[in-house]
Image 1 (spheres, rainbow, N blue to C red):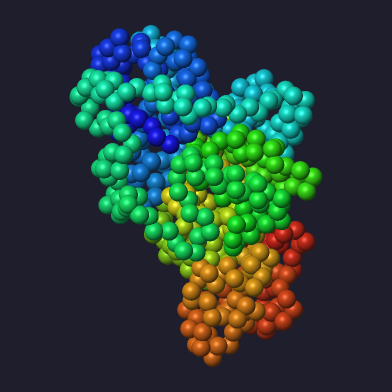
Image 2 (image 1 turned 90 degrees about the horizontal axis):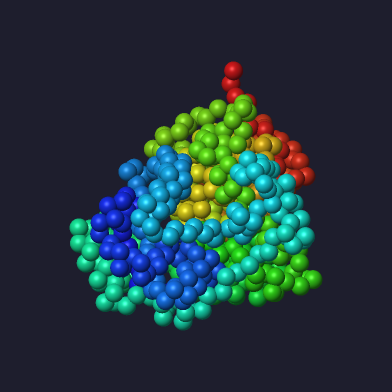
Length: 528
């Protein structure tokens, strides 16, 4: 997508004096500015749709604006746990309101459009917002589905012709004329092709090369190359919905191959809209794909749900007890918040915990910025329930590593869910061995990401420290973190031969419930 955008260094540079003293009346009265927030796309962009409509009617030109927020790429420390709640409250609430006030005081017509959700704020079937937003997803989903069925909500995509947009853009000469009036701000640039050099000033050296090499080297083990932009997002969506949707319900927990939509990075960064995906699902859904279509729409609603919950809860959404402030935790943290150099936490981050399925998931994240939903639940459960590490440290690490990390609401909402203080406060535990057996039975996924175990027989891959004898460990060169036979606190639903071997080396064996999503193995109770 080609935009002749103006990019400022940070939101703080927009001030009253900027509007009042540096933009002449004859300029701002002849143009319509489009502020792209997290929706840098042409399709289904309601704000852009109405701006084009207004520009045509009033014979005005369009000035697209994107504001680069330095806080998104500059972290004062390897992790910054306070960044999310603070920036969410300040930027989304206070700053947006201040911009509106500035525009109003200077006779600039300010129109705000909400376009990052499937069900937009003004379409929600509630009269008292955000107070009526339920804390339970099923209640939210049923309310939305009923409103859709009864035609109280119409999910409409705003169709925009690219030619209409481009013909209304300011010319190079007109942009330069405006640019000259911002001479005090040397950080303004007018072409996207200049962004790379501009951004380097605001990135740490170790980020610069990764972000702005002419050729990005993708890990060859990745199935999808996540190249940003609207065109790539639309192409991926079209391919998956037309060719893979019917199998989504049975493959979405897979680990290898094209098993899920993998649209989350593009969604989180505004390259594609939830409504566009929904429309494509409706176009291509049939009786065979109905189940998969319903599940995929439900996933889109989960994103909305967490956004609206964050709106309702404010800063407390990011606190230790999140949605359950009065609940007493069943455990206490052995690694408290901000202990980022802790050895055990670093083992988790690097995928060297000694639990093969957990490690494979974490190494995929480390090398590609992606992890499927099942993997996210398993590694979160492991960090919280097995390692007793504050869940917010895991959430912040995900915030740094994930390609879809800009979707903070979903990230923190899911982590709170795993910690049992989210929208569903039932205790949940995902046994790392059982989950590996359920979703990577022969260890193909483990072998892809953990080269140390590549030669280990499939029957031993999930418990190399139990099922291999000392000679075999030496032969396969098993590292020490995969050799400790006392690692497991419990073992569930294992093949009988594996369980017998485990029983001969450990005195702790737990049975399992029939639920895949809540493996029986209670975490250590909080010490009195």
